[in-house]
Length: 102
Image (tube, rainbow, N blue to C red; front, side, top):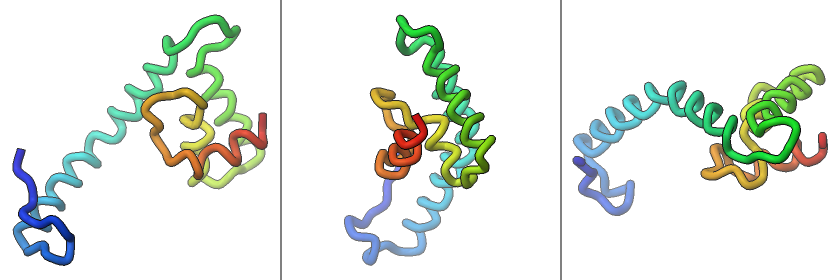
């Protein structure tokens, strides 16, 4: 895998930033697939409850939608389940809303 030549961003050149731009575009193009895979993984991630983690996430998102939470917070409603690994969004962003609505 090709990498940039710098250690500090201030030392990056045009070629470095062109490489990063290409890498970020490729990564962004796969976002939908990563999100769908993460949701699918929630279906079988833990047993014992009456609803799966996927169902719980979707219920939480529906509740958030019903009270018109910000679209920025919707990923928190869907993905911020304690114990879910790896966290898909920063915990500090997700948990305050999630916990306050349980």
